[in-house]
Length: 316
Image 1 (cartoon, rainbow, N blue to C red):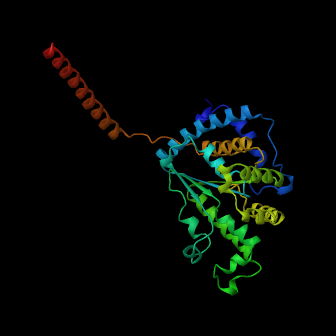
Image 2: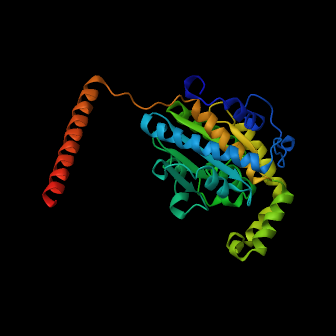
Image 3: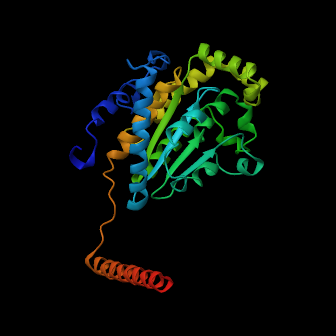
């Protein structure tokens, strides 16, 4: 065990994260990211890393809850069939569900459209000591709404406020909100599951061929696929404008789900270990009370043993 309780292989985990981390310090080009990257790993080795990360994450989450100072917000974005649901399921499967809150944001309701675009997600932000997971998020405003401008009209924003600067303004709004969260003790990690167009087609075909997966498919998925280039441009723009050291994007190679899970789990573990989470220390007064409780329980145990022996002797 290394200093500060960090495992000796923390550096190795960083090697699965740093190549895909975008924090605003360098220029970003989505086309330079390879969705099929495997990081010189094979599937068997990757699964061992994922299992180890689950154990580390379980311990970190327990400390996060007990420490009760930090909260963690994990945001998952990606095209249809990028693997967001399965990534959440596999990476987070070992943690205590009482300390984790998962929200999936679909098409906004009439009530949600009567509020600002971040209202429905803001009220779901994680409490101190807990991990919050957004499966899609307020970033849909810079993706679906930007690619389909007609949706903007349904938000009933005063017309004089809907200018050609609206997307830049929303970049600023989101960046300011994430800085606010970070300043109040929320660790933010944003994952873009970068799947290739060819791999998406294969996954769509798998859904059609497997009756158990037919429910996952809709004709709308094909309509959105035709807008692939527009979505890629929108993703590049939002990642460029909303990346920061306190709220980085991890552009996850998603063609191989097992490698995507290595990157995601390694990023979460590495970031949470930097928080230096600790169990609360018991003060002297409480320690004295605990000794009294221990003494009382031990006395009770001895009495039970004596009573049990007496009953046995009487029965004999």
